[in-house]
Image (cartoon, rainbow over all chains, first blue to last red; front, side):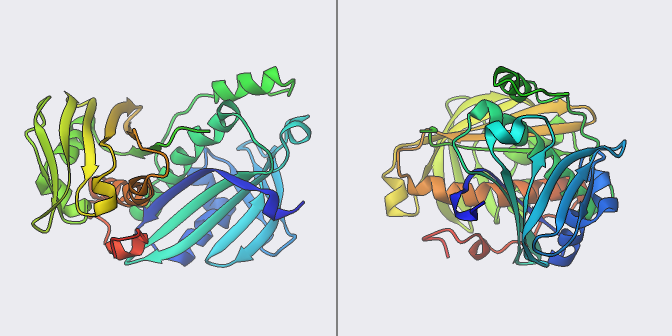
Length: 170
Length: 155
């Protein structure tokens, strides 16, 4: 896998009244992520080549990947592959990169989702629905101490597109 | 080719009414929008202007005003020569209740290919709307210096 083959397809930037260290912790700690990431827990071995996994609230493996770049508290890049049979074979791997930069008294967090081949807006709509909710809740959690309770149905448009490609979805 | 536009969604713990007020009142906007005043009566057909520290930066006309659900206006940047000569663009705010929260969707569209303004607003809106969210949720806007946005021609 060559990281240079990946092109950004979804970018979301949010400014947070926090420190780079606290934002880094919020992105990499299972306890923190459970609060704002729809109950999902991120478990990451913070070194290049380390494992990156996301577990659903019932403990099942949802996303598995590998740490590609790890520069605390500035930059984390991981492969972010949803464990649905046939998905990675048909769509290729997903790369997610978090960049954390000071901006005055605040922190700018930029999430970039990249892919190594063109994907339709239908396929990308799942991430585009999820990221604003996840990162809005992360911001609220760091600023107010409480995450947002965002009720969100399944990403129907993406699921329909996956089904059409013959990818089995839960 | 995707059409040149900028879409930003955020979820805010507030009410549609408070969010509408924040998007249409200078008292609010001066706190979260780089000390910018919103000059308009927000009636369809009325002029609209953004004035920062006494200097007009952007202007347009109100296209839709359906409080507290939908607001849109035309938008032209007037400070920078390149951007002033680009065709007017369109800003749309959609405000939807989402459980006990409010979902805000900003769509800024109508850019010419290779628009300089598109690059500028793509850096500006996340800062403005993040600060708006902070103000409504915590009572305090963010202190982001405009220079931190790295917008060309706006150092």
